[in-house]
Image (cartoon, rainbow, N blue to C red):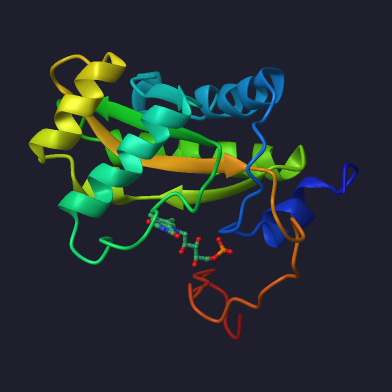
Length: 183
Ligand SMILES: Cc1cc2nc3c(=O)[nH]c(=O)nc-3n(C[C@H](O)[C@H](O)[C@H](O)COP(=O)(O)O)c2cc1C
């Protein structure tokens, strides 16, 4: 898949929810996060912060916090056992915080696919952004006041195929407005 061109990669990327337990090497993780850092941001603010978490204990604590504090996750590991999680924060004062974070996430998901790594957007840290246990974990990671979790990305080697097949998209309608008749 290394030479897959970008347009095919865009259409073939899929979320991975079954990860192999072995850790990713640091250069691979760093390349994925660098793609996130180079995402566009409103007014080029570059206000995202990326917490690259590979410490098994911290990963477990994040999963446990979600299980304890978020209804419906009592029996689940929200990160699907992935050996790495990139938590993306931004500033509460940034009106485009979520949009900036989303651009970074898409860049990282595509970069992950390009280097053979499975990824899945994990949104639960955002849902717990006002939860004191999640906030305490963030503080432990080094987050400053005014920073909030926008989203996170589970990363790891996929248990199955990285590209299990292109899935037809029937939503996301398109309206063309060309000014021409019968366009
Ligand atoms: C904003 C957003 C939030 C998401 N949150 C989660 C999540 O918390 N857990 C999860 O397993 N997948 C999550 N996903 C992944 C979507 O479920 C997935 O992208 C969608 O089902 C399409 O599948 P695909 O990524 O394989 O094309 C999220 C995706 C987005 C864009």
